[in-house]
Length: 228
Image 1: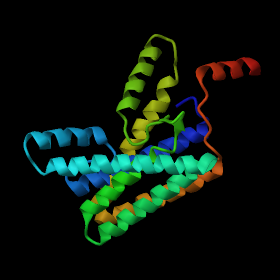
Image 2: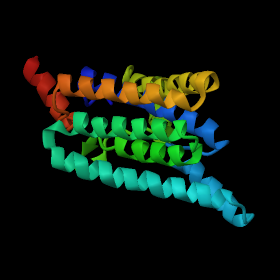
Image 3: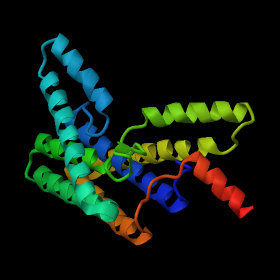
């Protein structure tokens, strides 16, 4: 996280909040399945297969749709070049708007699958060497890094490295709390707010400029030495 300038870290936190919001809405719509947390759906798939329940089909379909969203988002990002962040987020906003329309038509299940595709595509915003540089829709890896940075803090090696990972987790959790509240209040129409947030983040991403490769520690230390 600290390898990116602050404006990009703020964008990442906003995207994590969006993912938490959408995941909570999808979870409540589907009654216990996820639209951004595919580890949970993989477990649901395995349990469903073991007990021969329809849950396996739902979970497997969500995983496949999420992966398809990642593929589509990555292809769009590659074609967009330095404009990948606003372009990808524009596509995410469009998918979320489609999901909102589908939900209003009375098909919550179909809407949830569109949500999964949108969340897969979102992960193409931050890439480095063809790999995800910042996980936006899942927090297990982030929590592992948080624990490692806290260990470094205890050893007196790094006093601030944990903060960015903590902010990402809090952002996703806060977004999920808002999503759950909005779903309880207005049901499937809560997806419209997610579409509006994604569109806003697309505009922000375009305004703050291209997201370049994250600096490696050697580059950071070299730049600091040059500045000194």
